[in-house]
Image 1 (tube, rainbow, N blue to C red):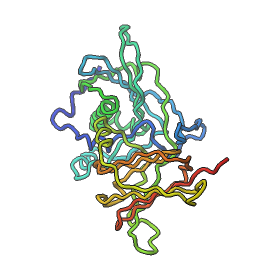
Image 2: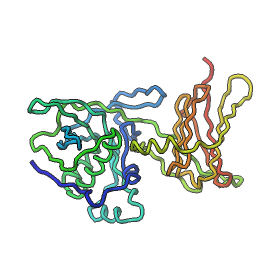
Image 3: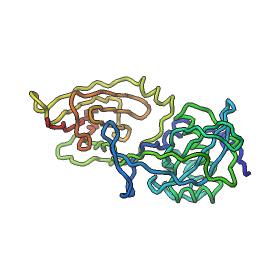
Image 4: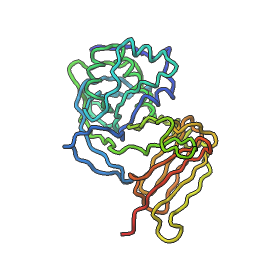
Length: 315
């Protein structure tokens, strides 16, 4: 069996860096296989169910000594990261913004399995794009970098600690039954950035349309929940009776650009998060929304985010 030592013993990657590199199992994806069955979550977000294809399997343990297997799998329905050479990856990692290179991956739920000796163990399935799978099979640099990020992602998502003395299984590509995973097919609302000048109909800077939702570490979620709630008002139009629209005006005086905002709108739920946890807003609304038709604009001058949410008509 082939083993690799700890690649991060001296240069551990920061949690903020890891957060920006990882993408979770509810990720949206473009170019989905039309033959796959689509359905919706409880908040109305459509997703498809995909079955991972086995690629390689590694064995490690938690710091508490529990045996863990990680099935690194692939699927065409996970987006492909930017194709870099080894030298280009090194340049990115040495740059001022190493998060410009991110690895889309879907980290599934842990499942209990039995190893070949009859003992209990835990397996995790991690899915990447097939072309990236080939990349990490050929490049030791990409493999070591990816495995470091992947382990950090599993640790952050499930609040465990893994040893880095992993071993690859030569004769097995997976352990246990690979579990179906869900991938979102609907993007988050794109927040348009407005200068506040009359006639300005397009954002000065088009924010990147984040097609994928990033993995959040446990402590990141705690920080997010303790961030201050911004001042906001919710208006309905028309003012009397069942509204056609709800309009939220959220005051964000410490925000400079729409690129630092992430907005999620469910059927009756609005969640706004900000980079560096400047603000956090999580509210339920009194009407069911047509969330797929919702939109938002951020005025750079007034520092107000306006969210327009069509309301489902009374049936």
